[in-house]
Length: 485
Ligand SMILES: *Cc1c(COP(=O)(O)O)cnc(C)c1O
Image (cartoon, rainbow, N blue to C red):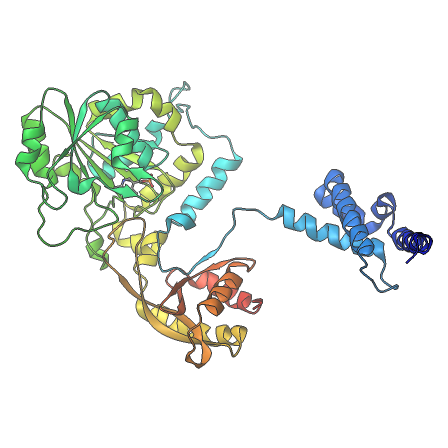
């Protein structure tokens, strides 16, 4: 090939590119259409101009790369369509509602407790109206946000005083900072827990400036282990609830009342990090027993910390209850200001706590408890109802069955106990093993408008129905039809 003919070819190609690119309309012209004006009404001019420009650039690149389009296609309509899709995708929130079919009711990664209607209404009110957050309505002078719900917390726990912070990790950090900075805190080696998300008792202890004094062994700690460790630098004896694990076999731990008695005999306070901390005996609802906050206070604990969004069923918060003098010190500590809760948390927490005044009605009203106590027969019927639509959506490559399943409470509460329930199990048809097909299905469920989060185990995808309440079932079933596999 001679140089001359090569140049001719280049020239032809250049001419061709020029003609196809000429079909791409100017951004200004696209913007003048009624459709573009509608987009501007929704997203504002700046974003629409950028989106149409980006769509036009992409189209030019495609055409130069040799893409061919139907000559009848109107490029201005295509650009608006592309821009509208891009703008919608950008406008979609990153924090979104999902279906929690994991079988874990208080799932930390899925936002833990779901709040009852009373709390939702209170949050909306707090979001849209001025509130007496730090304003004393009786005197017209400045108030303290702690005073709004502390009396209610005391009523429900038997404690003298209370305060609320951002979460239980903050509660422990603050309590240790206020009461044990530059001093020693005695904890059993069997209770040096790590809670998911990098909360480790020893780390919190060092960040609070306290020195951890470990006593006993992993499986056995005796009262005299605590006793022998007490010295002039001791600030606190502490017990930590073994939230997410259980030690079985040859074990010995010392009860709250024994540790509290020892602490008091030596003139020291005793604290309990209760973790989940329930306010009522769950055994009355047929659930496994978990120590209540009131019991810990009655057993002599001077301070108890627990989460708002675990078994309590409220918003993310850390509650600190105990002796008035200790709580006063904690409230006055500078970290309290940094860890305090906002009005939305207080608005949500108060109505949840109020529900506990009527324990007989709690099972219906408190969402967390309602989910935890859902009858297995209820879920069985639901599984049979959903089996057919699910099978239809998945087609012949998969086989859907309704099977018993056991859910867990989650968030470290009662890690060993399982709650009997029902769900859908999806396997590859024809008994094939097929990790890849199941992973593809799991990903497709996650890609739905309201993502469905299940669990893969034993060559099957498990969709536990415990957290799919009646109000959501129709939406779930309808969405199945949108699955793209
Ligand atoms: C869950 C838990 C925490 C942390 O509580 P958050 O509210 O998640 O900060 C601390 N201690 C124990 C024993 C827990 O179970």
